[in-house]
Amino acid sequence: MPDKIDQQRSPHFFEVTIERILPGGRGIAHADGRTVLVALAAPGDRLRIRFDRVKGSVAFASIVEIIEPSPQRVEPPCPYFGRCGGCDFQQLNYQAQLDAKVEIIRDCLRRLGGIENVPEFEITSAPQEWHYRARAQWQYDAVLKRLGYFEANSQRVCDVAECAVLTPELQSELERLRRKMSDDDLPEDARYFRVIAGDKEISVASGRGTGPTVREGAEARDVKRTIGGETYRLNAESFFQTNIDLLPQLIDAALGDAHGNSAIELYSGVGLFTVPLARRFKRVIAIEDDADATQFARENLANAVLQNTEVVNADVGELDENADALEAIDFLLLDPPRTGAESRVIFGIIKMKPQRISYVSCDPATLARDLKKLIARGYSIQSMRAFDMFPQTHHVETVVHLSIKNNTT
Image (cartoon, rainbow, N blue to C red; front, side, top):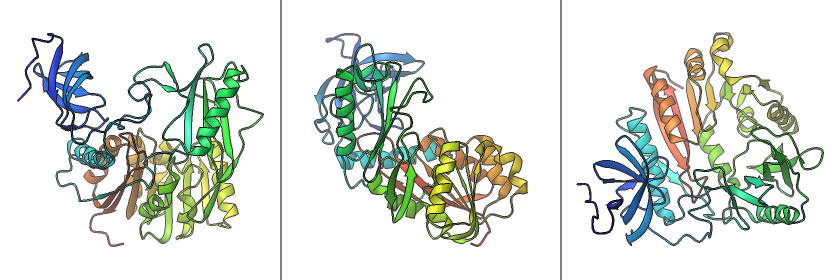
């Protein structure tokens, strides 16, 4: 039953009890005949809230007072929590974070994917709940002299002197850039700084708007990162997973026991999965639309002395048009961005009919949407596994293995 309005306090405030955490990280409750989504809540919290925005029968709300905290609630250690938009799970103890992420995945697969019987799966916890992030983007406001992350639901920069989820190397880099900011020694037209930690060095790139235009120095420094015995060259403008500690396990889960004659990888980046794939298959095709990432992938394969892989710099969305020209594929791996795979990519995969698919996802909602299409065309889920690559946030990485029905691999 919905909780009643606390008329004695104010007609604009409501008392609610949080039922659970939904995809997107907000807690769900009910008040005033509406479904209420509350930011920074914990399951079981009894709260006084106010509506920030109402859309039809759904209200988005913020906490005014914690009347009775949930047993799962902890005191967030970060002084910027609640203002900075970077972390939204610091109010939950770590086991509660893991439990919430498992339920988020289940909810998306059931509600958005139409999968009634979601397979049992485990979530692998992060070795470090804090100081794990080896890749970051810091926003810069040259007028107000602020360097940090965007505030929640805004384009204002939250000035951050210390970030509790950064690796020590990146924290030192943040402090270095802040000293340069104090000395008026940062590029005036810079709007953000991308940073990534290698094994021994840091790569930094600055940019304006949505695309890098200005870099610190002539070029962003290339760095090397060793993962599971493989060495990858990349720089701050490259996409790469942020939680280095979990990467060997993620790669093992994504590849499983896959081996054979032919494999194809979509959204292959600098070759994180491509290199180990090339050790298991006679022939590999890797497709990536970013030219710089493609070049890094070729170098990384060459450094690994692997010559059985064709790295293609092309729009992954063109897969639908070229699927018929590709020979039978034993195994297909895709690791798309948060937006998931385009419909034409999914249709291209269906045309190719790979015997097995490994889908690596950083967003349960788009994963569920894409799985629904694959399952409708004859694929079934063989196994699932989740990884807490992003502690203190609602984000979670999921690996799903599928096979075509009535096929033996």
